[in-house]
Length: 455
Image (tube, rainbow, N blue to C red):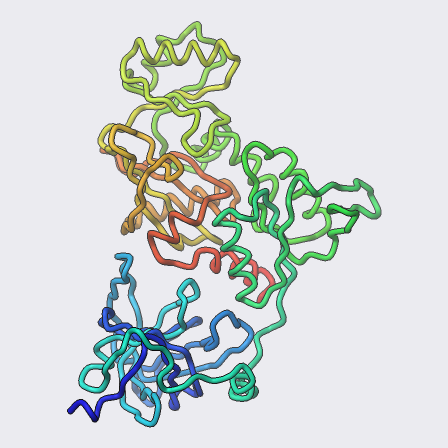
């Protein structure tokens, strides 16, 4: 029996003749039950009274320009649980796998694997009875050269030429910024990191301009992705407005970012749009501190600085006396503060919904460290996958729309009164949610730009 089995390394090149894929690199993983192939634009259809599915694939890793249009009989649609615990509904197809000189039919699921290292995962169900794996080896059946890959795919469709996209931010080494740059490049776009502090502008009715270090003029961009840290909101939004004046598409507008940074104004906008929030109080004078505390249901309560971010400037006052002390201390510093009812039943947990272009593309639950009530990842909170309810999705979408944000991190808390909105973030971090959900959020942001240009 052993001599009839194919010996594979941990990585091998294979092909799918019926799908028109001449070669694709696969991760050979006996720890995975199901095989999976990278696919985008997945759509079921009827062919000869049978269920089929069509999809596109970029078969070469880090090459978004080469596209193959595929179609195959649809076998099933099932829930697949990834290694990170994320559950996803996937279409299942059956087609012939050719590896070396042998060929046999396998089932595999279709999913977006942009954030993975391989376009193809070969699982144990497809290998059972036919394959032996030597995990110390790679490419035992050979691998194509760069030249031969070009020859094999010379007749495949080339993707639409890319856009010139600028990422307006402060730190190029930040995980979120690196992922956005990578995602744009992988989808064939020309990406430029623009440090906010190194940009300056010319205000002119006829020839407005934005300049970069060394006097370079930044007037030829198709789109800008603003990722503005709170400490430079004013200047970052001024630059974003200047790009808008130059008719450059901005993924979030300056107006939307500015109003999202004003906690009080944003809560007023959300309430006007019918979004429920925890009962909140705001005052300019500490004279009526006692009544302010009663207004939100008494202690314990939350005291927030309007300018706070990432959980900073947020204090839990467990007693009335503590609340009075915190409020009066903040007011003596002439700080603008909010007081808010404390949702005890949330038990240090909240939900972050990531909204892009009017859709919840991912959601995670954040849980605070023991003894901490703030669930922010930056403060040591942990993230896990969660299935949000239809009502929670509706709140997240409504909140992003009320703030006019195309990209938003919407924080929701579960209370005895139902889901309540905590706040809306116009530059939400990607590391926690991509790690928890295994989803390509950066790629979704780039796709939102492509959609605007109808690519």
